[in-house]
Length: 256
Image (tube, rainbow, N blue to C red; front, side, top):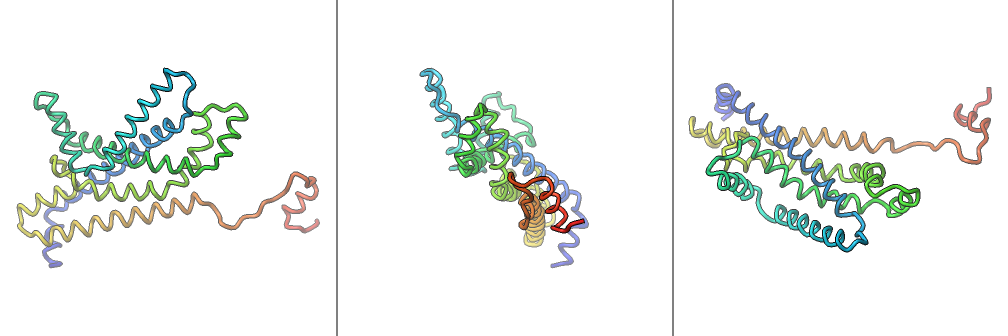
């Protein structure tokens, strides 16, 4: 078995590397773009209801459309979405299909955006309401409050969920083989059609997926720990402390 796997790697390593490259490209870009979509939707859905009746109606319509988008893409399989988007584009363009790589990026980004919208909404809700009120009290607009105060904190809170979505996207790119996208699983299917070593080929691909997802998980956990900062810290100084006392505290309580 190991000899067979070794021969597969030796003979088809270029195909395998190409599949890994396309898999990581779509997973990374899809996650980043999806996060951007989620942030925009999260900000829009937290905008206070306008007093103007016309704007109020427009916001309700927009909220309905965004809610429909989120629910539709969260409640249908990505494989089905890929077929609908890819062949739907061909239907409205007289059979002319969209570039497969671009299609893959669009499909994963839109799908991820639906999940990210709910993740970001949860992150925004987790921020204490008093921070919104304090920002509005000093005259900050809703957009400035979100971008300078709320979103930076929300991103830190939702980082584990975003990391998990990235790992899921690495695995879910395998469904894009239905539109002919040459990711890792597609390359495995092609290799099997040539060498007929079904078990060995897919065992190798499974190991590659595991290495990719586990390595990314370790890296993202390290980033999460770095963002958390030190667990043990000391608050120096106070509003009632004079300059001499503060300098003494900075020296560790030792007089010169």
